[in-house]
Length: 452
Image 1: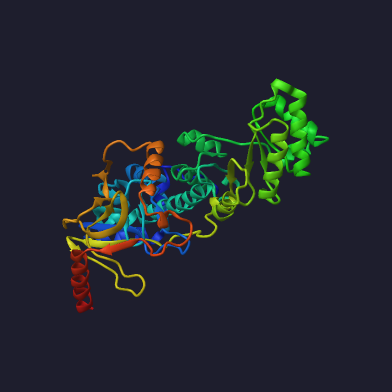
Image 2: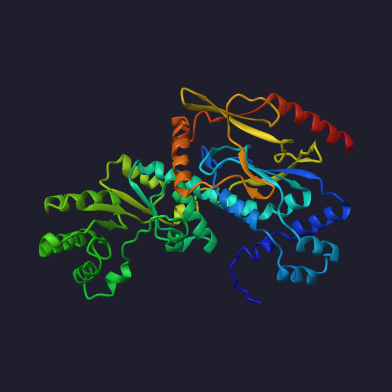
């Protein structure tokens, strides 16, 4: 047994909650294998979010396409005790055969709207719940944080420096992709660069400066290796570090090709102004100033609003863990079985029954409201849920990350300005329930409560 193994396609089937398997066994034993529909949605937005940015669909579809229970998984489950030979045989032949309709990655979305809908035989739809929630939750949360950071930067570049403080390897990889989709320009994460084609970027750490006898020696040595780099100047005294860079420029003359300096501590606004003045006076107006160090959208927005001469931002921990909203109230609920609507009526957790569509209504090119209705209704507006998988196979070629990134930028731009802003939207964006869905909800509720 490898206690520290990585999750791979071969063992992803066991990355689930035990009760998914025990329920699936009960369904099979009882003959409850009819068509089921589950919605994956967010119940409510965090207070600091006006909208979310849908992300994680590509991971979800890959999982559904490759999901199998191999011999090791079957042997392990057989040794646990609760599972019968009949159910283990069912799992040994398991393949996901259902359909998925989903909002394309990069679609702005709101509370109460299905981000994706799974239609499949009940045991199949049940077994995939945990993994789908895990992937869509993380990546939607990450993209929704990153789009705020990108908005705050107001056209200045943003680099993802968050890997070292993120919650595990999978989060570090998948969130880097989500950040890129949301408009982050580059990542320090080399594996994300290889895996997804994201531009990689990096400068130098304080340890390199400290390893040399003095800061000038360290900067000079680094430039011999990387002439067009960005130099870190705040290890000891920030403005003295800037002067050392200027001295190197005079020393090297035409061979000086440094692209920028990085500020990582202190009063970034004041230091950026002072550094810009020093660089400009030395004829180094082309040398950019980058800033990092516990930045988030609020800090970046303040720097931008204050006119700090900063050309780009490196954002790490606070974006990496979505510090102000580190989770979403995301759920995956049965809404139809064997052709009949199903719902929860629990206070605060009631759900809406039936197969659904979400449409976005526009006026003069700007979104004004969303409507959640039954799929069979004729709803005016742009449909957001689109075929993503049919009979266990993707519906067409998956969009590239660059295409999803372009979609995100375009769709966010179509939101009202108050919704795109960092401050709470007043009034919030409107999400309505169609008349047909309201009637279905009331009818199913009456039927269920009348039978209890």
